[in-house]
Length: 364
Image 1 (cartoon, rainbow, N blue to C red):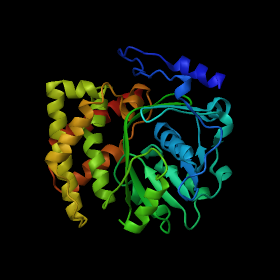
Image 2 (image 1 turned 45 degrees about the horizontal axis):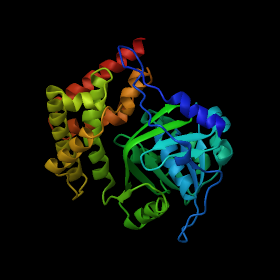
Image 3 (image 1 turned 135 degrees about the horizontal axis):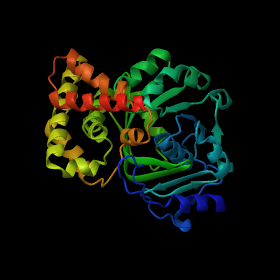
Image 4 (image 1 turned 180 degrees about the vertical axis):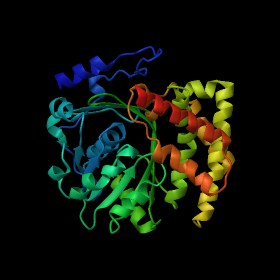
């Protein structure tokens, strides 16, 4: 506990973002009395059956949603890479608007190899989309015939890839509307929102009910979607303009975009185009759930106006000189627009700048 609290104190810092500097780190104070000290998982209430869950991809998203499931009483194992040593030694801290959590090291199950986790009931896939090339080797040791797979990832075409690898297993898409960052090894900051929209690849309502029951005892607001594809596109209505422009501008926070008249106008144009691409794609797939342009745009801009200076995941990747999620998050939607003959000049310009930023990174 002392080591964990020292980690909290060490992470309470601000960095003024200048040229080439790291993103601003803004953490709320985490008083000890408000931390949820979880020495062992509690038993789910109301007769909910405890599930074995493997989290593949233990960054901000994987650690946050995995820890909420652990808090709710499920048996959760985290597949980790860079943070494994810290989590094993010091545990996990989650500073959250929905209630802080502190898991000492002995209450966590941390592995660096999938084989050490073994077969599970649910696999939560929270990888960066460029890591989907490793999905088969990472997930195969965890998957048995009735294992459910939930991908909480950004991009288009995620579920198709996983379903092609595991054609007999139910695959779900999770769209997280959440402001969350991994600000230090073993430390996750959840500053706003948190709703998880879940759709089934195949849109089976009975299987969707299983996903709802998984999160039933947790603090995660879970919304089931009649169409996973419509839900994917709705999330892209935020990601493409805001995540995209944050990178295209060289690494800025969302408040810079919404508070600048020209940038806001460009984000508005790009979002309008994404809605048009989405509805064309939904029609092509015979989906009756269309996106309402006015409602979507009002909701997305309303959410972003209230976020404050939020660093998107891809903007952080850019500033930290890490690989960017180009293919599934940006190129796939743009290719879909080309295939469907939907003009999208604003979106095209954003993605061209992102590709330029990626090439600049590669030259360093």
